[in-house]
Image 1 (cartoon, rainbow, N blue to C red):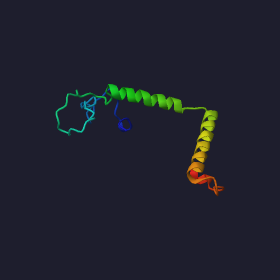
Image 2: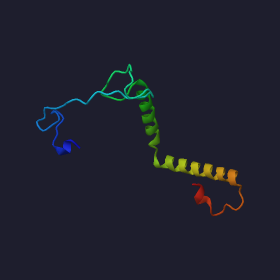
Image 3: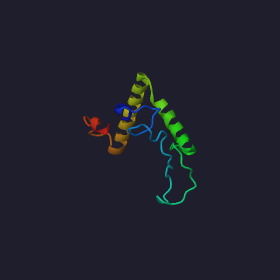
Image 4: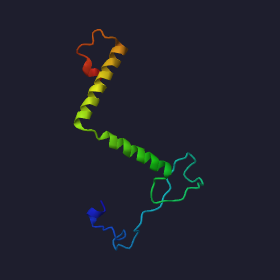
Length: 105
């Protein structure tokens, strides 16, 4: 957004370009203590402490696994449909379900 308005990365904010160059250091609040409570956390520019780095790595790994080929997606979709049908038969019984499969998806 800023670049669309004429800002460049090596200049500061403001009309003369003499403003802030680096982002404001902040502390990510992960407790329930209150906004003004004293904490031992050091203000950082990033919001990713060690435990959040691990969460981010797990999320990236899950996203990498989520990029499946078309054949793998089709197999997974068919497995999900079979599981859903089996669950529907188990919950509602197998009688008179013809024509209602679309509601169990």
